[in-house]
Amino acid sequence: MTNRPPKRHQLLGDKIAALRSQRRLSRAKLVSKALGLLTPDDQLRGFISESSLREIEEGNRAYLSRQLLELICAALECSASERFDVLLAADRNVFAERDGNTSEPLLAVLRALQLLLETDPVVKTQIEVLLDQRDATRLNAEELISILERVISMAAARMRREKFAGTPSTLQPPIV
Image 1 (cartoon, rainbow, N blue to C red):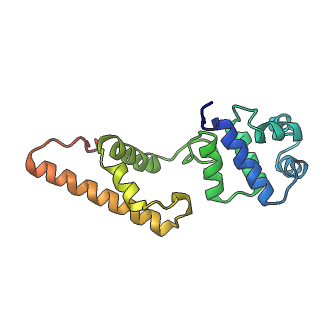
Image 2 (tube, rainbow, N blue to C red):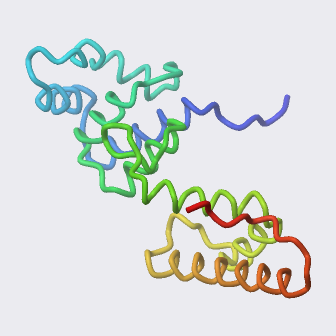
Image 3 (cartoon, rainbow, N blue to C red):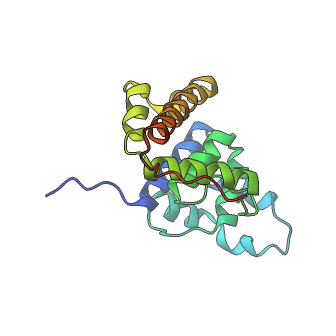
């Protein structure tokens, strides 16, 4: 028998169950709080119940809509970091606003990071070295920004060296 990683929906269920337990909420109380956030005619009312919450927490629901995830986060009164973790566990765009859309400036930053990770094979190794076996979820904003700043600086320096040496850089400048 092999040790397989838990399925994505089990990770999500575990995360929601842990947050609910931390807040000392029963499933019934969490459902009550969620229903209290909805209008009487909201269609989400049909998707949140004690039994559906149990299915989610036990990993028996493979998909939850963005609206239902946001409702659960609101009922749990999740911090931005906790909401990020829930959406990540649900395999959602963690950078989207509550309506599911991502702003253009943020998309530009994310695209730059994606290009950096895709085209510079050293970046992931540099991040691992800078993390120095620390859990990234436990770092404060200053530590995370410092790591990002150093990685970007090193990548930019490599690009300048390649340009100076006449080697083509794999990162392409944005078209303006």
